[in-house]
Length: 125
Length: 138
Image (cartoon, rainbow over all chains, first blue to last red; front, top):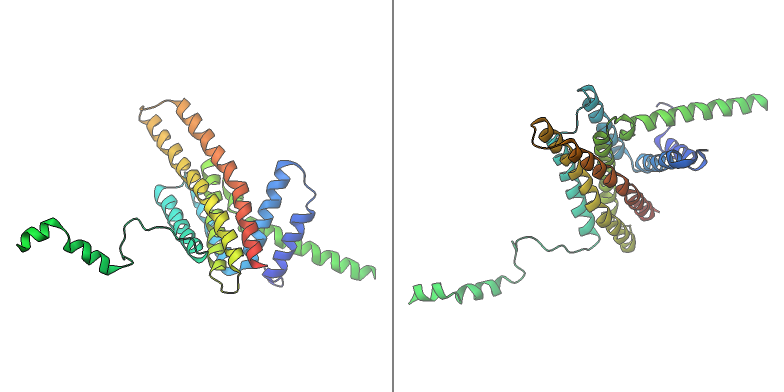
């Protein structure tokens, strides 16, 4: 890829996606794909590396008798998605309630509730 | 003048070949051969875009409204993408059940149709996410 910078390549791919003289569903699919690739090229090394890694992973599946993705491979992708999703929602200020209140907002109130527990009172007497 | 035009055309051709070869390396979908591999590739592309989105929304210069647009697109796309992932597992499980004689081929037909359905449904939502990310960048 010497001689051509990634940003020039991204621009070229974007131009191809606009001017690709293809019709029908396949043409549309190619245009969308070129759009994703251009976006990722513009974003830099991380996106490119992730796509190359994914392509290589699929090559391995094909080489291993066209096997399906394993449970572990699926779980690994899911976990990456969960992390990214949480970051996106947090950064946008979307508050998702935690499953268990690990850090109570008002610790004092919790202490009060504990003091009111009937068992504790009985024990104190 | 003609020589200059030929040089320009040759450069353009080299650039086009380079672009297309980059598309091949960077396009996991073109490497996949089975529907399950294609679905895996599609989910993988979704995750890569989602990670790019996560990086963008953490940039302080990106306006809150753009971050919220990305978050909305992701909130709509993720459940559907996760269904796609579950559908891959379901097809595998049914194949195993067929091998063990626990179920019949018609279940596999339904599960495969289901996988195709989630695959088709995630595409426009992924495009929406890409559009939101592009919007946040500009």
